[in-house]
Amino acid sequence: KWCDVGDIISVVLTQVREFSPHRNIQVELPDDPAFIYGDEVLLEQVLVNIVSNAIKYSPGESQIVITVASDKSSSQLTIWVADQGIGIPEAERIRIFDKFYRSESTQHVTGTGLGLAICKGIVEVHGGTIVAEPNSGGGTRMRIDIPMEAHGSRFPYSEQGEVEE
Ligand code: ATP
Ligand code: MG
Image (cartoon, rainbow, N blue to C red; front, side):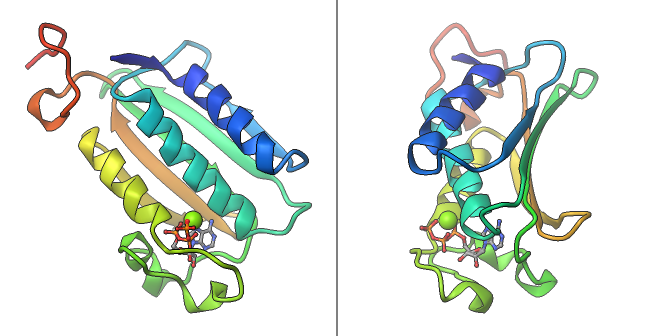
């Protein structure tokens, strides 16, 4: 179904606030509402995972910024989650999306290494991509690009009659 990205972000913030009530999280949304054709619960799960990583791998007092931008001409939606944490070494930026992969630099923090593998699967089912980039001021910036319009058979939850080929 069509999901309002602003609504997705507010659900994500509510969920994140339950385990991290005091983190400084800024949100920058586009002026016009943006919609993605997809499964809102799965998309929320992606962002909760990414924001949880940003929280987990950066100092408690540092800022996290979620930015949403939509490009109407290419009908692509981009979501960035930027932190000022320990960052991801360039050599590992692809492997962090592998199942059970955890960076040597973060072994002191517990985790299963599944979060990003799940995120990647969900983003790809929506026809999108997810990459880790270095954040300009240090830390990590995760970037998700998702097509806003329906994309046919690639999406398994499409309701009949609503999908444009
Ligand atoms: P979990 O399955 O509980 O999420 P996890 O956080 O270790 O465990 P992933 O979310 O898949 O697993 O992340 C994989 C690895 O990528 C992490 O162990 C960490 O080394 C690195 N990583 C992910 N996000 C960040 C980030 N924002 N900053 C620095 N390193 C990160
Ligand atoms: Mg994680």
